[in-house]
Amino acid sequence: MAPSEDCGWLLYLSLAAKCGGPHRLLGFAAVVAAAFVVTALLHWASPGGPAWGWYWWTRRAGLGIVGAAIPGPRGLPVLGSMGLMTGLAHRKLAAAGKARRRLMAFSLGETRVVVTADPDVARELLASAAFADRPVKESAYGLLFHRAIGFAPHGAYWRALRRVASAHLFSPRQIAGSAAQRAVIARQMVDAMTKQQGGAGAVRARRFLKRASLHNVMWSVFGRRYELLQAADGEEAAELKSLVDQGYDLLGQLNWSDHLPWLARFDLQRTRARCAALVPRVNRFVGRIIDEHRAARLRHGGAAAVMDFTDVLLSLQGSDRLSDADMIAVLWVRTYVAPSPYGEMIFRGTDTVAVLIEWVLARLVLHQDVQRRVHEELDRVVGPGRAVTESDTASLVYLQAVVKEVLRLHPPGPLLSWARLATSDVHVGGHLVPAGTTAMVNMWAITHDPAVWPDPAEFKPERFVGSPDHAADESFPVMGSDLRLAPFGSGRRVCPGKSLAMATVGFWVATLLHEFEWLPPASGDPPRGVDLSEVLRLSCEMAIPLEARLVPRHAV
Ligand code: HEM
Image 1 (tube, protein in one colour):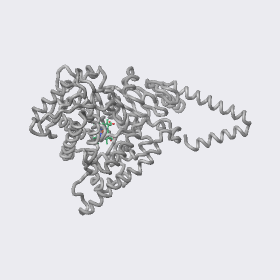
Image 2 (cartoon, rainbow, N blue to C red):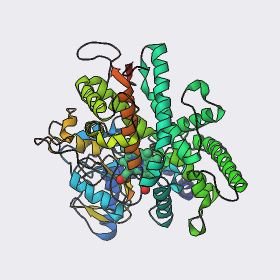
Image 3 (cartoon, helix red, strand yellow):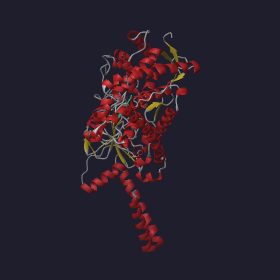
Image 4 (spheres, protein in one colour):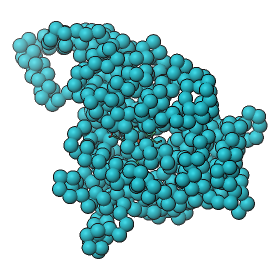
């Protein structure tokens, strides 16, 4: 509630008190409370709950226009269906939307939301120009995300950022150019895992994968090279890790005051306070790196010896030129770009890649027959005498099918994470979706729908290698043109890092499989020790980190 509204209420109450003493005041308060309860119940009674009720009532009163309401659960008065977005939201939404796959409405406090679990409606929604914006919430503003690619409003600034990132970070030439960097990090991972396996008897892959992904992004963006092993980490890497961890924490939570604005002043989850403490540290960290880049460019007569993404931003001229504050937003967010299933954020660049590789490895530990086929393919294509190179991955057809099948069963952003915001009234799936509505695609529900994928719960990479009795083959595109499996989203705001992500995942998985046999920590048949339970944080990751015994496949 705005401060002026507070003053209004106080004025009414003091007037009422003056006019008739405490009894009148109490009576007035009771009438106000009763009016509030009746209004809340009337709004709540609409399909989709209170936020939709509010919309339909004001529409009826103001314009006399009523379209067919979108079906959906009412949830609780005032709060709506906040419970749907806690825990494993994708599964809860899929269960709630079973009978309303095409489009379901629900309310998150005062926020109107629609979600679809139908590939055709998903295509309509993601391709529509009316959904090219994203809802930006309090924590996003606090962390400057609204100036970064993922959350900048659709317009000239966003287009300029995407153009620069596409040309200098995500183009095929840039991706090929950074292959050597990924090879160095892959080697560091193999060495670090070999060392840990020797000491502990089993390896917990997650910490290496997360560090490897973060170091990879830091290298491309800031030109920084870190070692993977803890002991070799300096102060800067430790500060980086702490900043990223705190950012994860902030962005991963469902911020109640984003949907119940009258709660915002209390800052109950301390979102604002924690953002305020984090931002100056981020500014110092990134600002120092920018200053170092500026100084190096001056030393080299205005150009960098080796261009990283910071140099690219510094070299922009004319209308593309960014202020220091925007540059910090773009660079920092780039290190962990990602909105959450709540319509807010998940760190993308680093988190998703590590999360996906951990799922792939877990599936391969669990399905030893599939792992054997991957090893056979690696022996045929690469052989024991040399390391895998990134150009080998094009020939590793079965391994690519494994990655696709894992993307289908465990999409890192099961709700496509980065929700969209309707900027104008628009018709989707036969319904009117009003401007200001948050829209989501439940990709997890689509990839687990038996009407879309036969035996959806089964892990069958074969479905992507041309088996005639399956719905797909090796040419099945996962980059957003077929909404039956579009883990990177689709349309104007499709993930720009998708090719880089697929190149990184394919190459690192191939290397880790070429070097090691991945066995369950405890022997047995079926293998024990791999728990596929999920937890939805910034991405949907394994609730119990994978542990595996690694056996080197080639003599050193
Ligand atoms: C397996 C890895 C990844 C997955 C599953 C993934 C998934 C996604 C999804 C679902 C979206 C939303 C798309 C939409 O709204 O239609 C997205 C957006 C985005 N992703 Fe990724 N992503 C991955 C890796 C990366 C990487 C490596 C980067 C960069 C280093 C990146 C940068 C971005 C950015 C900047 C956006 C926002 C685009 C915009 O709003 O214009 N992602 N990603």
